[in-house]
Amino acid sequence: MAGMEGMPGMTDPGPAHPAVAAAAAAKFTRELPLLKTRQPTARTNGTDVYATRIVDGTADILPGVKSRVRTYDGDFAGSIIRAERGRRVVMVHQNKTPDPSQVHLHGGVTPQRWDGGLMDNIEPGGFREYVYANDQPGATLWLHDHVHHAHAANVFRGVARPYLLHDPAEDAFNLPSGEFDQTLVLRDARFDANGDLAYLMDDAEGRSTILVNGVPWPVMRVTARKYRFRFVNAANLRFFVMALSSGTPFTQIGGDGGLLPAPWQAPVVAISPGERAEVVVDFSAFPKGTRLTLDNYIGPGPEADVGKVMAFEVGDPAPDTSSVPASLVPLPALAAPTVKRRFELAMGEPGSGDMTATINGQVFDHDRIDTTVRWGTTEEWTVVNTNATLPHNFHTHLAPFKVVSRNGEAPMPDESGLKDTVQVFPAQEVVLRITFDSHKGVFPYHCHMLDHSDMGMMAQLKVV
Ligand code: C2O
Ligand code: CU
Ligand code: CU
Image 1 (cartoon, rainbow, N blue to C red):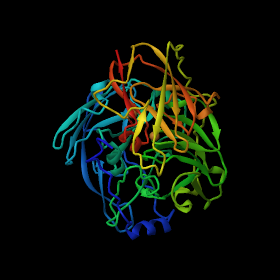
Image 2 (tube, rainbow, N blue to C red):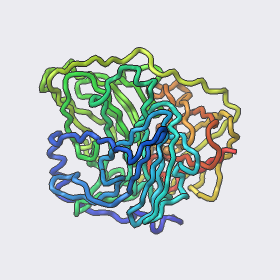
Image 3 (cartoon, protein in one colour):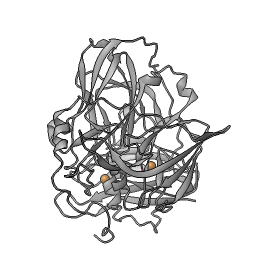
């Protein structure tokens, strides 16, 4: 395909290092790394300043192997940036790698110049400053690379980290907090013969090692009480459709845009690449020593491997004064839409040899504005997956949306809050309502199966 020469991921990586099989055989023995919080470099009255580096290095992912990775600050698992609603965060990113980079705050309502929107590269050896106002409801956001034509490969190599926006309104709820509020970053990986991460374009089949917080199939030792878990799907292509092996439902409290209007008992949590889900799990019902696995229902790869995500091992009871209220954060009223648009997602079916991925028949072109929107308007977008077998999803920068319907039916409670990424299954039509009342400028929207967006399933809107 024109324009794909020189893109990463065009050569088959071949067989994997034997440590990959060893890691698969040793499921649920490696301790889950709890993500560290990155401390600001400086704090002033209203601002936290972070000096960060995009670096190449190694990570201990597989037993006895140093895998080459590319990360923020050398931390493959992804140390957390914690922001407070109403307090500004300034991040100065130095690019210490030999390739250009870009930083995007996924889920952030950010003006164009700090959106990481594609063409403002941080060149090798250079640096760039990003300012985040954090003037939006608390939510589990994440930072990841967004450089044109290579963000899929960069995110796959590890250039991603959580960004938790805390909100005083939320702190009032008495949800599990502190050490009982843990972020679980989910992804998959493929390794080459050296044990390095091997990026091959559109390689859903090959990526069958499941990683949580940077390690394969870990076990988390929990006390017998309630925990809040923030799942981030940082995989390029894999959907995680997860249930607890005990059959116990999750109490889902949050999605992309933060807390839901009300919690609900979710038998399954399903998140596609880019999406987040927050749940509360109460382990107090299980006797000490119980091991629960977090099972995954679908996806390419050997069932024994991709069917398992991680395990929880229940320990001693622990005091617990946390609770989940019956109602959480009401959905803001969205005005009636005055403009309707339709977006058709399409790409070659597996085996067709066609590596073109499009929105409304066109591959991404950064010199083209695909959609012009008037500032202040609310629009209704119908997103259609025209593929017969391939799932897609749809992500908007700048503005979150409300899911109005899926194939004419009202959405499930997991989509009852504001979202920025939505699943669009084969032959489905999803209707969204979206208001453009924050910033003007040019912003991308795309399938967040990042291999697909690098293959062209991305377009640009301009708010005027
Ligand atoms: Cu999370 Cu345009 O991306
Ligand atoms: Cu985004
Ligand atoms: Cu897609």
